[in-house]
Amino acid sequence: MDTMHDTADISPDRKTVNREVLAGLPKVLIHDHLAGAPAQTPETLTAQVRDQLTELAADNVVYVELRISPELHTEGGLTLQEVVDCAVAGLDVPRIDARLILTAQRGRLVSEIAELAVRNHGRKVVGFDVAGPEVHSAGTDADAFRKLREAYVPFTMHSGPDGDIDSIAEAVQLGATRLSHAVALVDDFYIDTEGFEGVLPGRVSGWVRDRHLTLEFAPTLEVHLGAAEELGDHPLTLLQQLGFTCTVNTGNRTVAGSLTDQFVALADTFGYGPEEFFDLTVNAVQGAFLTEVERQDLLERVILPAYEAQDFEDDPSS
Ligand SMILES: [Zn+2]
Image (tube, rainbow, N blue to C red; front, side):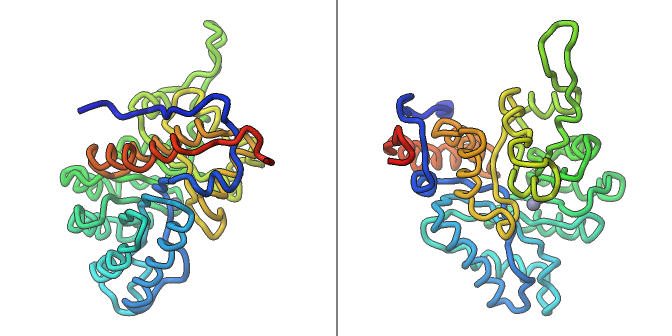
């Protein structure tokens, strides 16, 4: 198979972007939770999923892995399986390819939700996730993660923003191939004073970088949650410079707004232009819980042509 394109033919003279341009670019979102109050009936849950996807499609998100926490929707009498079925029924929204990640809350039903992910893997459920307070749960939930690995169901884990390097290490050792909000990676860095090579990753962060684990950042949300005082202090750019595989996401859209809002914030704060957004988008495609063929198709059929067709203005005010 051909190697995936990692560059778009973007003229270096055309580097600036404005909101309109960013809104028009096809975007890939691999960390977004279903918003709103827990649904009580099958119809409201399906409608909730459909409404959120319709909003995402309007923002030109062309592929999303939407996270739902099944146990939050069982109070109205739905079983965990019925929750999944109702959510799947809401995925059929035009102009967006949507899949589900099932999120378990730490310390609650991790095994049950993991088994639910195993049973539904392949029918729109692409992976598993654990969220909730950053307690180190390897001992209690190790069996659930073993079952996921044995069934080849990929998973990500919330490893921050209030987690430490040990929560990241735990996620890696359990077999997560993606890490959510792993801002504490920088705590594992050290300064090489002897060789004058600058900042270097330690053992855990070095593994994360060198094995290309996908980092799902949601910078606006992470700042909101106290991981950095302001966006300019967020470690995203440092991690990118050091070769980590970074993506940008909304996380919680109630707090963070749209993915276009995230891109605008990065353009305003860090001066990101088309090349940076293309790079982030390629990383999101590569990190998606899809097959290599599906990823290649998404990139070549949707992402690349749109970037190459876009006439990035020299002057964002024009
Ligand atoms: Zn999250």
